[in-house]
Length: 412
Image 1 (tube, rainbow, N blue to C red):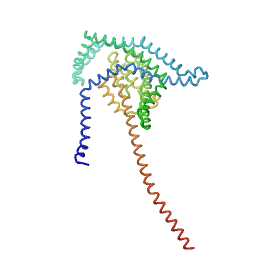
Image 2: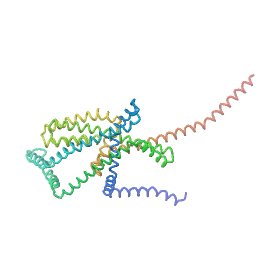
Image 3: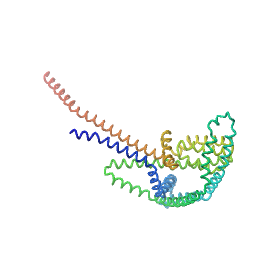
Image 4: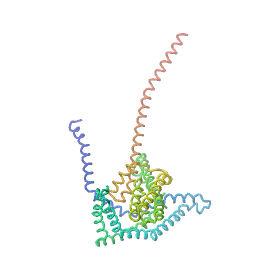
């Protein structure tokens, strides 16, 4: 190799590292524009995302009903098992959505509006509590009253600012758009469930067309199956568990006559989608609001009830619903939730964990495949070495046999 070629080869990795670092810097520097572009793209395809979400939610009950009707003695039900199961599942889902829009959402909106109107009074009560503390109290050193005054001033100004009317109107338009996206999502989900066999067959053909190598095509199918399993486990199982959390939390709050029980129960159910941290965050929020709206002992009772239920849920209910755990470290959950929340808000906090699990599964599959290939090469090398030594051993054996025959002939 020429000296100039050696110098060029040495500089290529340095050049690649410099380009990668520059791309990382430009990405971080323009993260706002990138997240905005991603948000706009997700907004455009939101009906498709709703359809996929509904499909995952309905997968477990739909499959159970389909298997049940296939085992039916009447051929009419056995031949039309998928169609009948789809009709039943979507009828129940549409009835549930209609019930939520007609009864649950109006109460939640009423609770939210009443809570927003009561916030100034709650802030005044909190300030009076800290202002009347003894001078030797440890809380006086933290100057919490002034912190609340400074932060609540901006909040109240935003809450009652007449300029927010335009944002309220925009919020109403977004709500109407969200209802339209949900309806379109139901239609897309209907087609995904009915035609899932043909859709799966098409993507398998497309996969084999892209990857000419059969091994790579099978590996891609394996990765997609892992991703599908993670999403199904997280969305369907967590959805059912979050519904249980919503019902239990709302019931507990109604028993203790806590205001905004339905709204707070909805918070408990929504935050349950965040593993490990979600239940802690929701219990803290609910306890603080209960302390402000009721009294200390009611807040303590509510917190104890929620903590006991979360222990039962984490150790008995959720493992039986999910059956296969996501197997992700709590510290990884905290890191992914913080990063997702920092860049994509609440949605990022909810999506961070399944995305992290998917990346983890792909990396584990890649590492396992690499280790298998390495072990296979080592075994092949050992086999070749044994095969090379085998003829020498056979030659030695034949020589020994010939010498033994000659010796016998001589003795005779």
